Image (cartoon, rainbow, N blue to C red; front, side):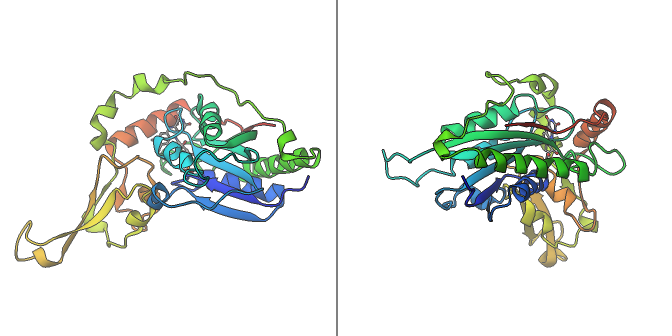
Length: 296
Ligand SMILES: Cc1cc2nc3c(=O)[nH]c(=O)nc-3n(C[C@H](O)[C@H](O)[C@H](O)COP(=O)(O)O)c2cc1C
């Protein structure tokens, strides 16, 4: 059976998960369409209908799990698409992918399999890839520079294996499902370490206003619309007030993805001290190189 098209679907605030999915698609060698679950609009938009294409769904691992925001957006992919009670002719064959920052992926791949299966997808291949940790900074790196050429060669080779799996099968219904490693109830091992969840405002990145040019890069890349440029008309002084603009961040909406920090052209947007402390722990405890895993 030939693969008619591949839909690359990713939630990828700092771009790693998308890059891996795109490279797998390259190995599959079929026309590619993109569905971006990253911008805030993915919370409300109507996604295009699925027909006979193969889906690749990729997300990062957050605290050993699928990020809540990614799970919500994936569950919307097929909603409102079929008339109530209508049956789709077959489940949508899917390659599920998680990326992680060299600590651990725990049950995230297994959880992603469950989430996609709930809404009409069927995992037929699964992959775990390494990407630079979202908290990584050049001075104190974790998985810095990954995915590198070796990782991407593995991603492309994995895509070729998916293509071969299709070539050996006559109908979509006959593609064998894959069961990713992991268990349910899902691991909560990070929960014990993260007493600082209670102080989430301490983890949110912030802006050094004197270095900030208000270029909006942080506003544009924020997946949850947590950042805005606030016009201050009368504070701190009515005399300078008319032109004063400050960056304000909604601590409750921020998911700590650090896309704002990584995309700031002047270095004005920085990680909080709490994240930098956690980054230094990651750098000390998780510096041994881990390798991608694939299941088909
Ligand atoms: C809030 C948060 C929690 C994270 N938790 C983990 C984790 O448990 N294990 C790990 O190895 N990496 C963890 N990471 C790192 C990301 O999984 C990794 O950088 C990912 O590849 C980023 O994907 P993206 O570039 O598509 O956004 C975490 C990152 C963030 C922002």
